[in-house]
Image (cartoon, rainbow, N blue to C red; front, top):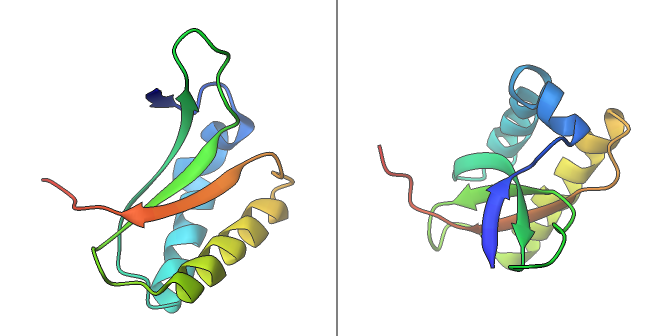
Length: 98
């Protein structure tokens, strides 16, 4: 399996300047200790790319499952504000390296 950029998904054209700031504000308001956010596609070698996903990294052991679910659904609501409904949200523990 490989991880690649979100490709030509509509979200890529508005992510940095419009959507990401809203997502970051939402995560901060919810107390999510996020480390990074980005749009990506997972692909099995030799297979067509899977649908794009909004990936949210959080500090290890900082987010309970029910809080992660609430944050993911809120992010989906933000995406719907921009008529983006063909993308998933995945939250996983991540350590950000500078």
